[in-house]
Image (cartoon, rainbow, N blue to C red):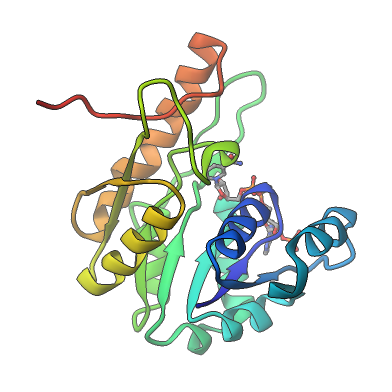
Length: 215
Ligand SMILES: NC(=O)c1ccc[n+]([C@@H]2O[C@H](COP(=O)([O-])OP(=O)(O)OC[C@H]3O[C@@H](n4cnc5c(N)ncnc54)[C@H](OP(=O)(O)O)[C@@H]3O)[C@@H](O)[C@H]2O)c1
């Protein structure tokens, strides 16, 4: 699969490396292609990795990942060009955070209810699935925890798109996927990010992940 990733930060590069390790080809989209960490990423990625503009990455991807700063996701998507997402699976990993000096972030006010819903509204012909937003980037690919693999929560309106994301998650070492329904579930998934940060602060431990006990 060809995967376009909007973004060049820690998450974009980590997911990009994970997709390549899973046999896919990846293009990262950025407005700053000369950043040194991208040159380093390219060397590591080898021939299956490339860098382009936001528009290039959106055109390139059969699946397009939105991995920009959360509150800038709409701006990056508009820069990429709305029509470039037509019919595609769009994997939204963003959290729209308001940075609060001296304290944990909060969710930025969002008239759509969540970034997942805002992205789906901006891209009505795309099939948006929210995933990966509830885990720190060092554990996005093949997480290993003493209690076994964590759970990944996903949501989205299109069943086939969620199946595609489920297969990606399996390749990334996430065998347990909890599908909480339509894209409006992004409200809870994005709130979980804040809970994750507050848990990290309370425990002074960032190697943490969610797992639901069941019998
Ligand atoms: N860090 C984590 O562990 C983690 C975990 C789960 C989810 N997330 C979410 O994943 C997303 C990416 O996180 P990150 O830490 O990798 O990176 P980040 O620092 O939140 O975002 C960096 C990316 O945002 C783009 N960007 C910033 N302002 C922009 C604007 N005005 N217009 C267009 N693009 C803009 C940058 O573009 P350029 O490439 O042009 O610089 C860059 O690619 C965020 O939404 C974050 O909340 C992060």
